[in-house]
Amino acid sequence: MKTKRIMIAALLVASFACAASSGTHDVADGSNWPEFHGPGRTNISPERDLLKQWPEGGPRLLWTYAQCGKGYSGVIIAEGMIFTAGDFGREEMLLALDTDGTLLWRSSNGDAWRGPSPGSRATPTYTDGAIYHMNPAGRLAAYEARSGRQLWAVDLKSRFEARHGIWAFAENVIVDGKKVLCMPGGPKGRVVALDKRTGQTLWANTEIEHSAAYCSGVVVTYGGVRQLITMTQRSVVGVDVEDGRLVWSAPFVPTSPQNALTPVFRDGYVFVACGHSSGGSLMKIDPASRTASTVWHRPDLDDCHSGALLVDGRLYGCACRMGGRSFYCIDFLTGETIRLDKTMGKVGITCADGMIYALNHRGTMSLLAIILGGFETAGRFELKKKPTNSYLAHPVVCGGRLYIRCNQDLYAYDVRAN
Image (tube, rainbow, N blue to C red; front, side, top):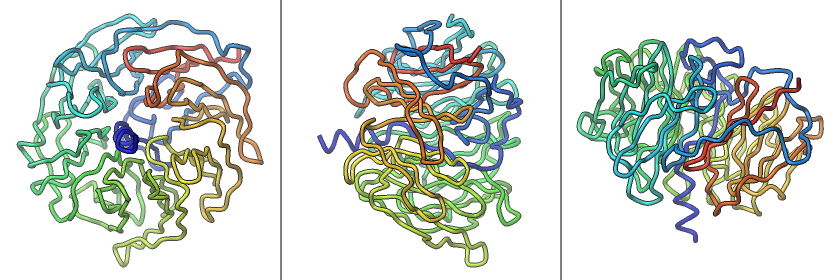
């Protein structure tokens, strides 16, 4: 059981950062969710006028699409289309649906993952009419969003001697300007930037010491430097987006080799965490010394794949083991507890219109109001009950809808107030 719990924790890189834009060009008007955790990877939707209380049985189900393929990939929304990924037999496929849940196209992105916990991992990324996606074997490819036509593909293992861990590659790549940023973790490229038009290497950082974990990073500007903040298996690093140089690094050594939570950034402070008793730490970046010091550490905040939200100076997330599974609200700068809830189990989260949407990994969907005391329940409904860790893809709120992915099934609910 311990092995299984550790296995699942790495499947979805999970978290977000409150930071600058990751470089996508869609207007953040609520009708686009162009990458993992949305514009800027804040995991906070800009939408308004959504339901503040759910009726008995939950919001209205609009449609279900039941052929997403096997996997854990989330959804993005752009150009009036919905994109995700899944495994079909021995192939991993990208899919595009219209907003009525009708399939528009499917395109192959190499071999399906048939190792531990088989299925797709990464969520696609959209920018400027193209979709970018890394498959579990390290094949990074670009596709025309409207047609699914492949534009280019790169084998990260061959080019950078990338090596995946037990649960394969699981990174949601970032597009910043003309660069596709990712962490192959190989000796010929720990972190790299590829030209988004051609796939050619723009730079490759080889000075970082450790290999890749399962982290999807975030791009921020701090100290006058635009940088990718991400995690290796044993550290947190900041890499200059312009030239790939290592800006700073700090150790963060978990009890299991799967630093997966996306770092949460605000004003030079970075929250990182890993599951299975590793705990969570807030660090303060010091550009002068090229490192980061620990402000506080809590062993009970072992948040690995639920996602974390920073709202009005408060950090929300889900601790997975120490002291029992707890949904938490804490003060970001001090680490002091505002509220803990042990009734929801393990959840993946997103936020919209002052509400947190929390999806239990067996199929309970909760709506939480953000209040002075942390949060309170404003609605709950049950999806099809599945084995533990089936609902790993984080929920998405976009265009007045709540999207929930569970393996083959994608559900769309109407959450508009009017």
